[in-house]
Length: 319
Image (cartoon, rainbow, N blue to C red; front, side, top):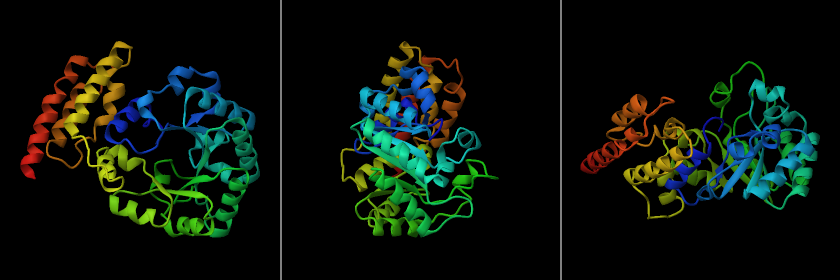
């Protein structure tokens, strides 16, 4: 998720779940090759298993990024074929590549030959007026023939003109049955479903029809949902409380501030930690008033533990 799943967000999410695979924001090939590699691609080993999501359509550049990702210790590299934004389209990557299956196949083939870590793809089920089984299955087959055996399908088509990226996440209707049909006809492939998933019961239903589930916005808005997933999907009973997560995060902030990281760069990701709980508004208000400015004082971070502990007591009383 752009501007969301940076290294600080991933560290935070890993405190909540030990079993999920985490993905970076989409990184353009040119940025990965020519930019500040430590800043753009660096990660904390606690984040693993971790996939680098890349955007591009130049097979040589994609090949180079694969080698970089492997050398840096990433566990997977994922090519984004689903982002519908105008900026991304202008640079010829993302969802517009659904219209160019041969080019995508060439890119994936080159990527796979360049590294030993898995190369996966994330795409949509169609584009504009095209949303049918035959077209999607043909595209999936083209990708798989190039060597990609794991495909993440966002169960909405992409509208390439007329909608913003945000609108593209809501207006195109979800079509889960189409994804299920693709899995049914491609049993040799790992098909992971994405889009509109908000609770554990949905996850269980999807896992009856697909190999995995990817969740983005719901986790960002309600990160503690990951703890529920750990418990109900992975059968993990050793779940940290929200205050325990906050305590570990304060330690992380303290260490990062010493390296020059701004407090707001980390704490902006934690707004939803108490989503749906007693004390949620107080938590959000304190973050908004004290943690979101560029010059936020680290000393004020310590006070969030008082809020976290009070919230924990309030919610235990409710139970």
